[in-house]
Figure 1 (cartoon, rainbow, N blue to C red):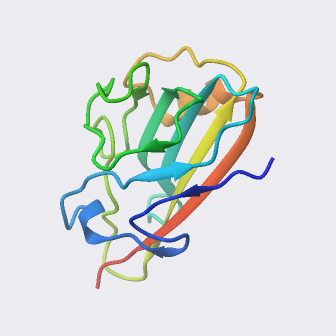
Figure 2 (cartoon, rainbow, N blue to C red):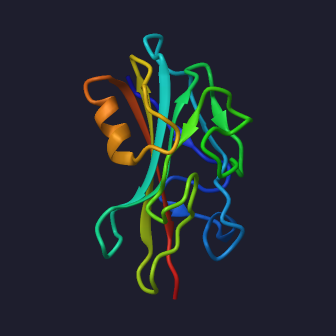
Length: 156
């Protein structure tokens, strides 16, 4: 199934606004998508930077979202279970914090930030604060659809 993920803040392969980076307010961007497949029981989202000098760097991990959900508002609170999204949980990013940690690359060429939304055919059984690795393991064999949005950000 073709599925798409978009943001009103930036286009696919476009520049992520400073507001959503460590150089700005460092708040999560608004995201929206089409209806999930019927067999979806849960949605999960991972944002990472494969261009980081230390290897892929995780910026956001969130799961337990209802398959009826069609968007995430801007500035999801950095807490394990955001009150605005009952039933969902956020994990630890590679900054060592819960929730969204915006792009913060070293000076040089722009980095690519991959926002990947997954539709799962089962509910994950992870505790809030879990890692990306734990989420990926829980999703193994259960992904029924995937959508991706790539944003760019660089510092001169």
